[in-house]
Image (cartoon, rainbow, N blue to C red; front, side, top):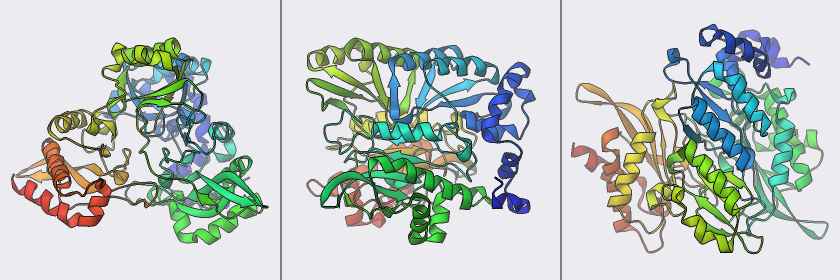
Length: 535
């Protein structure tokens, strides 16, 4: 059925006109042809549609390489799948793999000629790139230890799989105004960053007909980029069996009423801001039928998606071991070694996290010591240094055409310096994005860096703007951006000066974001200004 918005062609943006000619899912039919003819044969309009296959053109475009994103819904990965990802990285991606902030695995240096073999090998082990990007429902974020977490309220893994399977390759929802991000979690520690998703299901409890029922509260309209917005409570409580119906309803509303004129004004948050939460809820209920009002929120804190060390599972005698993948980057040998360890010491189960790390599951008590002695866990340690522990980083200018600053190498140098020079009682959340698009989610970090270009003397140079005091979970707040910027090669010492200011002035037990609120961002501004003035 033709949508009403499709009739107003003069108002649609360029991508919308392309999607009217060909659905994003149809690009799969062109892959064999492009693989035979090569990069130069790709029609310009198809570069947008290739995102539905998880393909982003890498910098520089004329080199003909792609970033390829592989979906890992909820972070659920098997050893067999991990091995295939490693083999693909070795055969086609110069041995490099990155973990994204939505569980996905990303390969680089991919040419269109490689795609038929890559897709066939992924399909054999149940992996897919389909709709890992594009204007469609993206990879759903979940508690990576769902089903094993002794503190979780609900094991949401089966629900997440149900919702993910429904939307996967579903043409009813393959043409949305922009990307649509969901999270579903029963964890009390908000590992999914519920407040920055378009649609989130967070653990809650509600008394219904005299009985206390566990389920989910619903939040809508979160998102970052240049105009960040916290997801708002929809005043809806749902049982596990109602999650899919609500997800379908919200996605349908976004599809039918979301904005398609300007790409930078097409996310769900903008529709919600114009409608208001009351009207949005009314439209949802029209599609789902009556729903209960919100229950008691059971979220107690925010763990930043980080689950390190040896942790007891709900299954007696078993443990999950959270590993640090520094800045989310590792190589083919390392992922294959982790697959082998998952089989040798566990049952072959691994998980990726939205903090760009990995977890090994079902490790018997008697095997923990032997596992920790394995050589690969020297770098991919379960016990990372404080700054490295909660650092998140995008790909930056190395691959991204939108990037303004190089990030991965700089971030590695920054972390090495800070972990040597500064002693922390508790890890800080440090996120580094190469541009305003916020792929590293700098607005929710204790300290967030955003790449910019700044003038130093007569030269333009890569630099970072600083923002402070971000936090999710209870009392969630976006970070406050400071004025000015610091040349990229001076960023480490600038961070050091701000952290030392915190360490010397904080109260016992006071966290960074609490200190920022107490002393005010202006106090940090003075510290940053003093550092910048030093030249």
